[in-house]
Image (tube, rainbow, N blue to C red; front, side, top):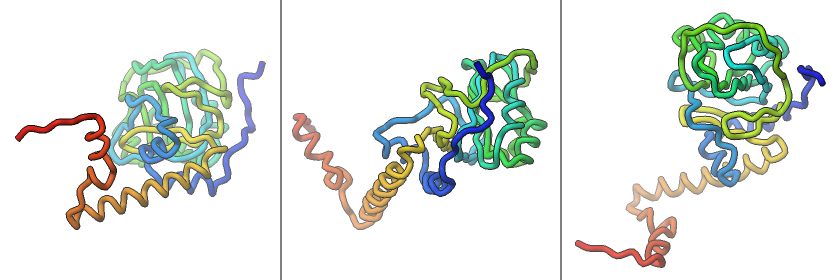
Length: 224
C-alpha cells in the first residue's frame, strides 16, 4: 500500500475563490451547521486567514518527516493539513519550514500539533492554525501518509477538500458541495445585512427573526 499519493484532484480555483469570500462561521451555518473543526485549533496570531484545497498528511506524534515531504509535494494555494493524533507538545513546524512553504506558494498550515517560531512566522505573514506554540523539537524517523483521507479535529478531511479559517476557527467544505454552499452563504449574508441595517431604523430583532413568536409558543412569562 502506497504511503504517498503524489497527484490529487484539486477543486476549480473559481470555486475556492467563491468560498473564500465568506467567513468559516457563515460557511458552517450555510451547510447545515456541518464541517466545523475542533475549536482548540486557532490561528497562532490574530488576523491570520487561510483558504485552499487540503494536502493531507498523517504522522506519528513528535515526528515531522512526513510534513517536510508534504511541503515538497505541495502546489501553490494548497493548505497543509498535518494530523499527529492531537500531539501538541512538540513544535513540528517553524520559521525554516515556513519560509520553504511560502517559497512554494503554500497557503498555510493547519495542524493538531504545536508549532514554534511564532513571532517569525507572524512577521513573514504565513498563516498557521494550531492548538498553540511549543518549543520542543521533533524527530524525523517514522513514515506516515500523504494525500489520503485523515481523521482530523473531529472531521474526515479528504485531499482536495476546501479548508477555510479565520480568528473564529476552521471549517471544511467538500468541493462537490462548494457551489451550493457559496450560494447559501451569500443568501445568509444578504439577510443578515438587512437585519443589521434595519436596527438603525428602530427595528426589533425578536420580531424580525420570529423569535418573539417562538418564545410565546413555548410559554415564556415576564415580570416587571
